[in-house]
Length: 227
Length: 247
Image (cartoon, rainbow over all chains, first blue to last red):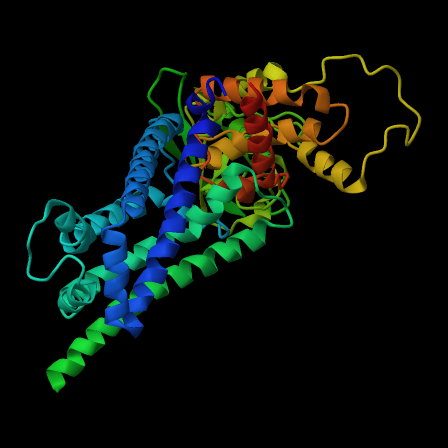
């Protein structure tokens, strides 16, 4: 494996593998969140289990390393690509029809995802998992996930910000998922369009799942106010 | 018909270039784009001006020399065609056509619309060949090759190395070209013994020459005059990773 990670394909492999790990995490996170729609109590049980589980903490640490690698290599590759493009840009440029908009804007989409993640961490991770680890006290308990969901998603501005964030994640995933598979080399003429469709369907399921929780709690808050 | 040509003019590799507009260039719908440039050049010579320098050779879509970026597309708006296969009927009477050289750090401008594409030759020389003597032509079917693989190898081998892939790519990546050259050998039994060495050497040379990293936008595939598929890039990645994991 000498020199693998110094090569262009090696660096892309890091992006792909870490990206696929993050995709799997999103699937897990979305499935966990869906529980909150059906039962706040059951959701709190999940929060309780994960908050005090050292395996989950170890998993979070591994995921954080993967996430950092994904971001660092995104910037390294982008800097190299800008250098390779040269200093003079085309005066007249057209995007061919088969080129997805997302594929040409992955870095900016990634930055939006990152900013949204900062907001999400300050809302939930900091007041739940982190609070439990350091014993900090906030408005609600660290394992009372349902109360936190109800608190934040009853605020229209936060709801809109989260929905915009999910749209950015959707665009990032529609390209990122199939692109990772292509980079690893698991693609051919037969699977090309299939993988792209699977990628779009997967991204849509993930983002609709997340959005469903946000919208459900927002609607619940409206109903409570009306009552 | 008459067209206005907005052409990139640059005296030499170090000079600062700029667009020069040539109005009312007389041509016909059945004249090729390169012939229209020839017509313009003749008029420039008659006026005592420096003609426009541009690459061209076979003018039948085989050599890959005609490297022009026309109205936002490498080789112009026609699909699966080189610049020499582009005819003026693709444009409207009175249209302004912007003509630029390939823009990529790997292809520095030599003069006007001509760029140095020797980087592709260097990548090819790094491993795009079979180094042993295959002897005379073998008997038919002595070396069985499936129709599917033969077709894929032939499709990859249609790459003419024109550079449109790197020119179209926002990352200046040459991976479509390199993957086509790796694939045309990797798919055939004659190319397998050196497949690992070839993938290692050609990718290393591509990186050394400063080409960018593919982000799978598919712009290269959309603009390739020979329709080379990016599934070749997946094959190149497989070949390279297999070779590197064995190192």
